[in-house]
Length: 143
Image 1 (spheres, helix red, strand yellow):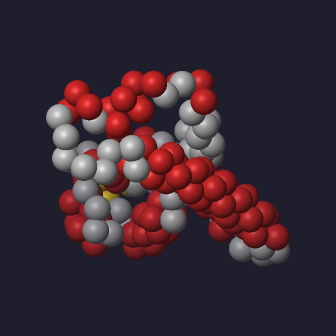
Image 2 (cartoon, helix red, strand yellow):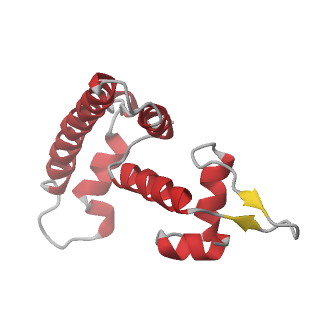
């Protein structure tokens, strides 16, 4: 199948297919004598796998690791569990950060309960007075 057909079957764009090829997540396909890419069912399966991993917010590094492990079907799946355990830890950390962010937003929102002139808005005053250094560092495993 051609690149447009692969994109349609995998429910993504041609640009996405090319991007994953460029990133080395999707292997380069064979080419016709006219230099058109020809994809196989294996490409469809791998592209769906990649897209499912991305839907779980996995990084390209995590996906590369999982793909490499998937290419060794006789090995045990302990390393796959390790990748997932690390990813779950990243999600847990992000949830803690988002909870802290919500507290900050709620605190700012309570400073402006009524309709008043913009120059008297407690939210705007709070934003202007915030110490940028007090902002919590965001942790992410994505590049």
